[in-house]
Length: 131
Image (cartoon, rainbow, N blue to C red):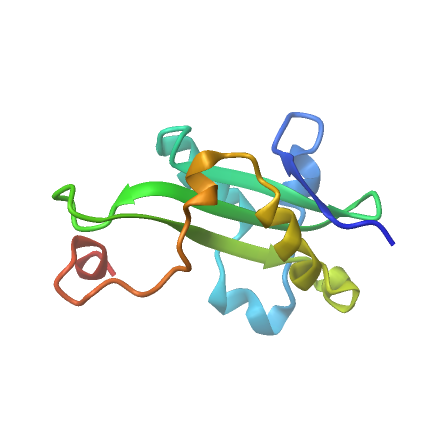
């Protein structure tokens, strides 16, 4: 079995990415891919990192990571992590999400190499105030 791959979103795979649908009972928990791509568009290219998860030659999910966000807005703390993870409802049984974790570890970006696991911002941070 081959490992899933993460592919840059291109005109050739855009429809597959936008077509990713999570299970109905998960829809309240994650934004649709099209909204996430719009968010990626308005962030600098070195911050938002959207990727299609391809497993066995088919679109199995979508993720977007973030790099070096100024967490408090004052230059004291920069964070990187996973912004969104959408696994296609018909791919849940393939364990694409679990199997994509080692793929993330092979990403060559130095920003991702120094990424930390996401943790909720403190109540006093600008990110928390925006929620």
